[in-house]
Length: 151
Image 1 (cartoon, one colour):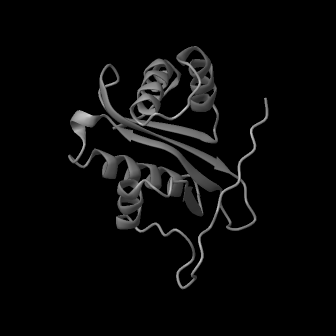
Image 2 (tube, helix red, strand yellow):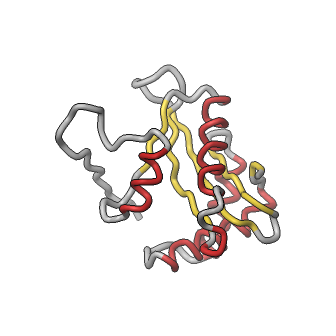
Image 3 (cartoon, helix red, strand yellow):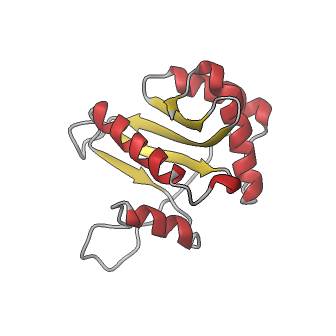
């Protein structure tokens, strides 16, 4: 497992498209994603990890960090975590998540947020197994994320 660099942007863009196709999620095409991944991995607030070889990776994770008033260090968002279907249930997702957390902590991060579709029970179970909670313990409501895209 290694931190991706600008030379890995092509494989990251391809994996992002494969991830979106598998789960029937809308995504920009490869040609749009490629320069975005190049900018992300070059930016100090961006982080991408690849599991396996750079030529044929088993999975990837994408994390962004931003300043926040809610903790002393940056707030991290796990934007993506994907393991190719043939490699699932081999601990790769856990390793990617743990390495992401370790890198965020190394960079002084104070907390990590993850957005998960409510119907994605497997992903929710995965993150809960690793210590993430949907809302603050003891509350009886769901936290909602609102989104507005700008063209």
